[in-house]
Length: 227
Ligand SMILES: *[C@@H]1O[C@H](CO)[C@@H](O)[C@H](O)[C@H]1NC(C)=O
Ligand SMILES: *[C@@H]1O[C@H](CO)[C@@H](O)[C@H](O)[C@H]1NC(C)=O
Ligand SMILES: *[C@@H]1O[C@H](CO)[C@@H](O)[C@H](O)[C@H]1NC(C)=O
Ligand SMILES: *[C@@H]1O[C@H](CO)[C@@H](O)[C@H](O)[C@H]1NC(C)=O
Ligand SMILES: *[C@@H]1O[C@H](CO)[C@@H](O)[C@H](O)[C@H]1NC(C)=O
Ligand SMILES: *[C@@H]1O[C@H](CO)[C@@H](O)[C@H](O)[C@H]1NC(C)=O
Image (cartoon, rainbow, N blue to C red; front, side, top):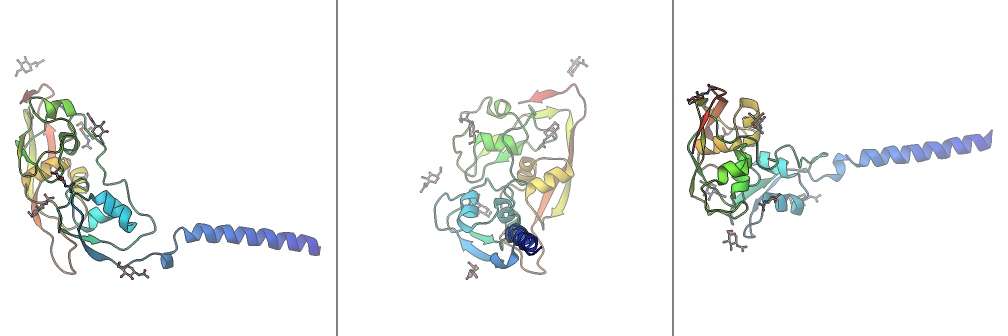
């Protein structure tokens, strides 16, 4: 009887040790929940590298700063809000997973304005376009960095359209808006070409005003490409 109790207690001990272990994966007390502002001090440091450096999720940093896209490389001296640590850092939900499927942009606009660290590969992903269709007629290689502030003409689908609406951006990254409203990150960028991020809003402050493209769609399954 005593032996059984001992074994039982040992098992109970082992069980609660492993339960503690599970809990410790998400022990709020071990997290540093303080957010702070980081002024980038390394040239070409990516948001991904910052996330590794501060042990945060890259998407958590992106959303805390209302980033257009976490693959835009911040400028030296830019202030980035580093949010407090959370139990489940988000490394995936904001990531654009490479070029898309379309051979032209539905609706528009016509010109994409490059931001820091852009490549045709990234732009294709942000516009849900194939690499071939964005690359045709371009002098740039897929992963060649294009200087910020250049216009890139994108092929348009004809006939197609989007609705355009003024919008106060107060939460998330552009991918959240694009997925919710039926457009793409690139199209929202094209409507507010100089916007790329906004360091965390203080309490009560309103977010930046942008335009969003909504319900971008083909108007005929028989469309042509205006290159
Ligand atoms: C949490 O992070 C802040 C900002 O980096 C730092 O000032 C503070 O000392 C950290 N707290 C702990 C308990 O490590
Ligand atoms: C940062 O990237 C730009 C553009 O690709 C490049 O011209 C510059 O040399 C890079 N700077 C450093 C320190 O890597
Ligand atoms: C982001 O926008 C600000 C304000 O327009 C600009 O000064 C900065 O150079 C831009 N950053 C990048 C990475 O394009
Ligand atoms: C890309 O376009 C295709 C075809 O319209 C659509 O099915 C898909 O959901 C789009 N993907 C994104 C990420 O917008
Ligand atoms: C461009 O870079 C992406 C991501 O790093 C990679 O998957 C892709 O193969 C590269 N494409 C080319 C043509 O080098
Ligand atoms: C598709 O559109 C083109 C140009 O508008 C037209 O010449 C062609 O007949 C159309 N094809 C079909 C199958 O409707």
